Length: 118
Image 1 (cartoon, rainbow, N blue to C red):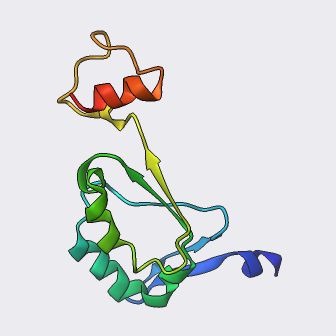
Image 2: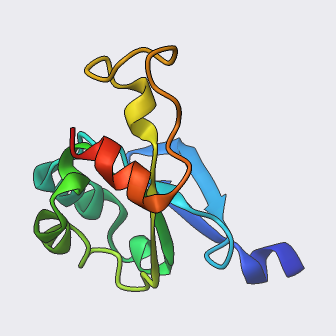
Image 3: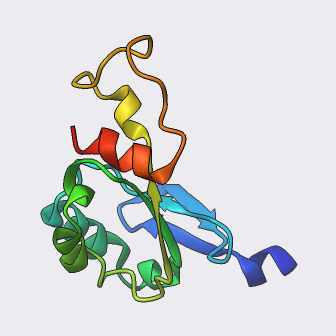
């Protein structure tokens, strides 16, 4: 019974087998960097008020999330949202960056910002 007090069921109305439980206080929803407003509208259409329980999301700093003003219109569907975590250093996996051998990982925030602006 305690599990059901802490966790919320998220279930697609047309795919009952795709249901999962979420603990809003500790679980994080990871949104891909390619997500577009139309995708989130579809998510909202299928999950509706269930999304209100999501309190934390994780995004990469690249792609859609690189431009902070573009982020704002995408967030109102998560009415319970309190934290947006941003995954830094994902540039290491982008083919446009130098090889690992050519560039050391930034050690400070300033070095990171300099590397990210290349």
